[in-house]
Each structure stands twice: as structure tokens, then as C-alpha cells.
Image (cartoon, rainbow, N blue to C red; front, side):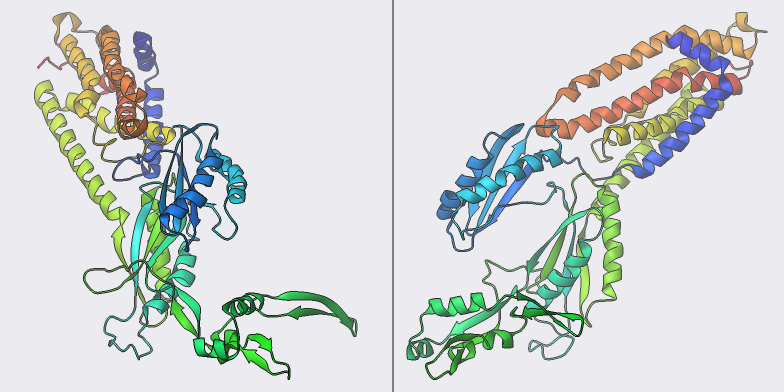
Length: 513
């Protein structure tokens, strides 16, 4: 078969050249579309179920929330195992599925079990929800929302902002806008003070009015809603009747009526308590560079997206948001995945370029022919373009493991044997006077089968790596696939393009080195 492929290539030289141009075009496009990352993503197929219960201790979280959720998830198809973490106020149950399971099918299976879990959890102790569709490498961009750095401690100038105000800007403006970026699944916010309405009752006032706390709770709960009252028709116009009671300010809370005395005097919340904005109770703070408390956000990438492309979109969005921020507020990134990717790819490019130059120099020296060396060296970039096409089709990302494993010596083996045999036969006295095409045909067909077997044996060596599973599979299978794609491309080029180039650019006067 290898000999027939060489014969077909020599009989259709211009078609082979045209197909090579198509390979260059398709490979260049695949190179631009290839997902680039620093390292392979070894995260397994998993779905997290998160439940917040601020009033419960870890032991109660485990007994009342985590165990019912785990029990509800038992028996899900394709499930590998379930693990959980119970912390103060938080339950995190991770359902791990078998490799190859579609993440959206896995989430659908978990979603179908969530109603059962909600029924098993006591009312008022939290509602289980699924986590974002992200992986362990999902954190691609981290930034700080800062106020004016030169503000005095008193923060009495318009450009100075409290941690609560900065957190509010982050939650309700910056994070809201960044979530609209394609490829971003979530924005995690940390630090600052989460803004809440706080009602601080006066014990003496409660005792004086003989008012239990439960009545205050009931009044606050019942007076924070809007209700509809049908409509009235007046002058051929429909007037909707609504009772507006949603709280929108501190004053609205203060004006809530708790009860009315016998003589009709209302008792307001402001009469027995102080209402003000206060931060939610925190477990800790975020600091940065020893400058004190910071308000930060972490951009989470959707599973399967190209981190390099998504980060560029995020940075464009951040640049646009900067013009809309309040005076004195800035967004300062302190982690950018593209920096790590750029350094990693720079290392890979440096190694590949230096390796390619070294291989080309050795080829020119050993073959003793500039044209022969360049013909063999042309297999390197073309085989890499073929590998890029295969990587994109197979969903393999370009990283330190996959691209760093390329061995140019293996790639040019077949082409070196082809050109070496062509030169050998051309230097033979029996070939004098024969047409170049006839000599090249005889020389290449003579070694076509051994070349195919030699490269095929190298490819077979990498096949066992494809059987790896788990973390090992995710780490080394991309490397094996990339090398195999490059070797297949080099073999095809050695049997098609190299004989054609040898026929077009070699001369009868070539001699064996």
C-alpha cells in the first residue's frame, strides 16, 4: 500500500502540491483555534451540590444536610463515587462520574435527585443547589476593586469608599457585567463587607412595651412584600391596585408598624430598635500585599472553554467597565492566566524552535545538500500543522505536556530515509541518463514499505498510553495523541510530498554524501 501511495503521488504531483497547500491552510486555522493552556486539566467529571445553613455547626450540617444529600444521590447511573465536606454553615457534596460522561448529562441526573434531597432536609435549614460548570483550572482571572489609595483613614471625602461600598460595587456592578462575558460561568467575590439591614432592638424598650422578639420578627417578615388587589376601571382606563411594601431603605424598615395600642397609636420599629446598615458576620478577611483589607473577585471559566480567549474577553470587558466606575474606584488584576500560558508557550516555542534549527543543521550537514536538507526539513512544520488539526478534532489542548513532547528527530526519520535513498540511487552509475522521475520513483518505492513499518512501530509504542485512565490518563493521553498525530502526518508527507519535492528539485548530478 505504501508503494502504491508513492506511485500515485508521483503520477499526480500537482495534486499533491495542491493538497499540501490545503494542509497548510487548514493547519494554520487549527493552530489559531487550538485551545492553549499551561498544563492539562486533570479534573474528573464531577457535579457539586452546595447547601448553605448559617446557623448549623459542622456536626449538624453532616447529620441534617450532607447525609440526606448523599443518600439522595446514591444509585445515579455512571456514578463513580460521592465525597463530601461539612463545614460551619456549608455542606459541599461532590458527585464524581465515570470518565467520558457528558457533564450536562451528569448535571441533569443530579438535578433530578435534588427534589428528593430537599424533602429530606428539615424546613428552614437550607436548599441544596448545584455548583458552577467549572473545573480545577477554572480560575482564570483575579482582580481587586480598590478605592482611592490616597484616602485618609477617616474616609470623609467623596472619592473614598468603605469596604462595604466596594463590595457592593463588586457584587452589583462589576460581577454582574463580567457574568455576561461568553465563556464565564461565575464570578466569586471575597473580602469587604456584605451589606445588610440590621435591626438592633433596645431591651428596655421591648420590656416597657411588653413586646416579645417573635412579634418583631413577624412584623419585619410580613411587611416586606408587594401584593396585588385586582384593578378598577375608570374613564375606560384600567387602574391596577397594588400594595407596595418591599423594603428599599433604612427609613422603610423604621416605619414598619409592629402593633397598635388600644387608643390607636402605632408602635414603629424605630421606637424600640435602631435600624442601620451593617456587614454580615464574617469568617475572615482578604488582604493583599500587606496593604490591609481588599475586595477581590475571581472569574471562573466555563468547562471546556479556551482560557486564552476567555481571558482576553474578560480584559476587554474590564477595560470598558473602568469608564463606568464611580470616581476613585479602579479594577486592578493580580492574576491573569494568559501570563502563565504565555510563559509556558514561550518555553515550548523556544524548545521547538531550537530543536528544529538543530535538526535542520544536522540534516544539512549529514545530507551534504542544501536542497535535500530543506526538503526533509519541510516535513517538520507540515507535520506540526497536521498535528494541530488532529488536536483540535480530538479536543486536545496545547500545553507544556502535549506540545513539549514533540520530537523532531522522530518526525523527520521517514523523510531522511527517502531523500538519502534518492541521493544514493542518483549517484549510482547505473542511473546515469535515466529521467529524474524514474530514478526518484525507483528510490522511494524501494524504501516506502520499510519507512511505513518503522514509523508505524513508533506509533504503536504510544498506543498503551491511551489506555490510561483517571489523573494519569488526563495528564499523558494528550501527549501521546499529539505525538501520534505528528507521526501520522510525517509518514503521510514522507510517502507523498517528499517524493514529489525530490522529483521537482533534485538534479541528476546529485551525489551521495
